[in-house]
Length: 277
Image 1 (cartoon, helix red, strand yellow):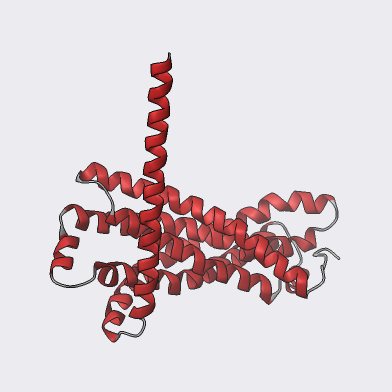
Image 2 (tube, rainbow, N blue to C red):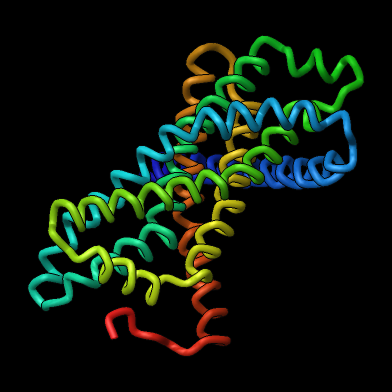
């Protein structure tokens, strides 16, 4: 009995030490990436690498992001209509749809789609380079792999994730409008009037600012998993799975933390205003 308990405690201790070591390695990788990326902004040689990643990360992600945003807005319209109609507030449906899309659902779901599409691709690409020792080859030629491989991907994600979120917001608003007006019969003028009253530039800005944090988290986590993946096809596949799960959890955690921070800032400078008043 004592031997079994001791074995379990030893295993728990070893796992804890391993997790602490992994956290330390990730922290060091994160700091190196930030410093190198900041320095890369002043180096013109980095710009062609960034343009390439901007096309891969941003342009190719536009269709799936727009489709995601449109269906989010349409689904919100269908689900929320009955509750508001029961209280005689169906003309306020636009406020509920648009503020939900621009502040929360648009940024979060767009980031989740990017974590699945871009995060997995980054992890697989860098993981394959790690397994085939291409990263070591870059290092042996005197080139910093963080500058050459990670910084362009991080900067491209930071620059384009907010714009992709704007695309998702736009399509969510348009999708919610068409369902609300054409299918549910809500007056179009009232729909936009109440939406303009309830949705402020602050709400849109909050969602866009979240995009910087979401994009940075996805890029750093995915690149780290690619740099540290185990050998073989199984190791690359496992790294891709871990990258998506870690990115998804970090998106939710960052969304909660940023929501608390932005709410505190808003309540400090502006009074509360009812959306159905």
